[in-house]
Length: 112
Image (cartoon, rainbow, N blue to C red; front, side):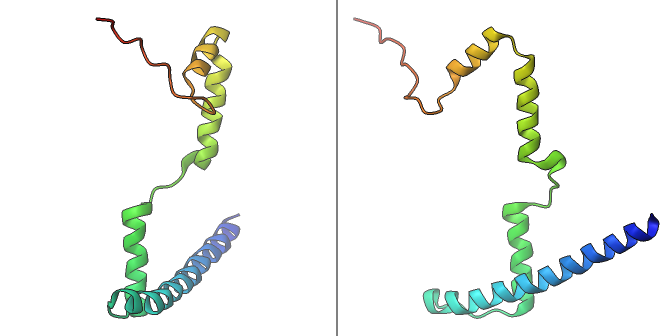
C-alpha cells in the first residue's frame, strides 16, 4: 500500500514538473510573439514566464483546494437544503428567484 502511494506521488510530481515546463514555454512564446509587437514591451525568458504563471495564479486563482468537489459540493448542499424545506418554504424560495423572469415587482409609488 505504501509503495502504491509513493508511486502515485512520484507520478503526480512528474506530471506537475512536466506541465509547469510546458506551460512556461507556452507563456514565454505567446508573450514574445504577441506583447512586443502590440505594446512595444521587452521579450521575456523562460524563468520570467514561470514567474508570471505563479504571479497570475496567486492574483487570480489562488492556491486553495476545492474541498468536496467545488461546484458539485455546492449543488449537493442545495439539494439537501431543498429536501428539508416545507412546501411553503420552497414556494417562497421560488418566488424570490429571477431565473428567466422579468425584474421584481416594484413597490407602488406613494400618491401625492
